[in-house]
Length: 544
Image 1 (cartoon, helix red, strand yellow):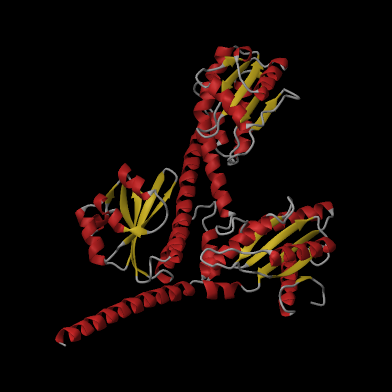
Image 2 (cartoon, rainbow, N blue to C red):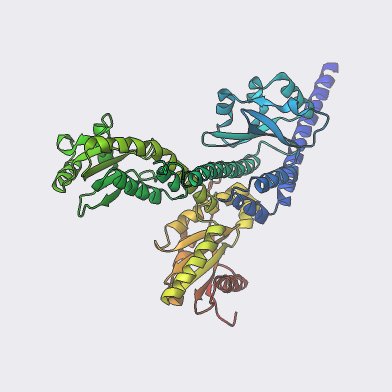
């Protein structure tokens, strides 16, 4: 009987413990939900757009810190910024009674490699073996148990150590904090590039000052410094080839190089050569590069290839009087082949080739970095569509073009009718999945000249150049039917989800004569469609 009573007591104690753990978990998750709901989606969207080309580190860093405190429950924050070969204390919150030397880290390749894994917040246990004892004791003293890095490509800019009082293991916490880290990393990287450009610009300005004493010519590197001003890869390649033609006394050339887009067809650039066969296959370009990469240059007549396309290209080169071929990579990932003919001898041209190759990588890599960052600043992270910032810019441009050529333009604004129900019933990850699949549908439904963007939340916009009211209505009806018939599959939910949308359309110049008025007209049509029962599409009319 005594043993039975003991077992009953133990069972009751175990049940009480499990109940306590369950209640604690529910409370933590409720705290997280409550904290994240304090953050307006508009504010978070504005934050994600604030890391634009200007590289406003101070503004972005301040917003990161504020969001960590207000929306992510972080009552302890320590941020170390990389300076002079080490990581030094740059910002802190919720701690006191310490020396700055307590939070100093020496930079090492092992530390950098561990940090540059991803932007996701992780437990400090994986980092402790690289931290000095004094640093670890401070983390333990303040209960700081998570970190996330700030880096971009090869550059490490800093590291955050945080403690949060909400549920930190949920996917929503991890992904949102990673978004903060990525945005701040982009801002630091932009500033890094701007600093490089500023230094090169000073060098350029100095080189252009006349030397009265000896009347020397500006150094040859000046032509490369001038190209630093350009941030478009294609512009830089074109200017580089033109400078090479002049410096090497080359009459004609043909340059084939890999596209920046993975899987994109090779690009062809020519001067003084008409009707030349183009290399349009990456495999053919790679074959030529491998054949000549170990030599400074090769006479066209000595180059042997195996594919029919490359043989036709080489025969055409000889027919057009191009004498030599050389490997000319833009970056380690983007190979290129240059063929030329001219008055200069091959040895003199070879010297110019080496000089231009030495500068090309840094110029193109710098421009590609800006292009990638600009693309990111114009892209919605979830759907992959254009974002609100890009939408406003393109709408302004397209309306100006429509004015100039006296053409019409349609704008469609729509939103999902029951996304809130999906979020409340299946969770926000299910809602995110629906939005992402909606982006896929829109990409496959628009014309090549149309622009589709996520306006914010569950709202989307479509700009339709050269479309009138009739075309706008027909497109809205067709798109609405596609969405009604679509089946949205969500991981963890056995049955597909169904979705409907309400749409509003307006046409320039019929309904508005500028971008703001056109947005207002389309928005009014959308509101009217929702008032009429949702799952409708409506074109703006003055009576609305």
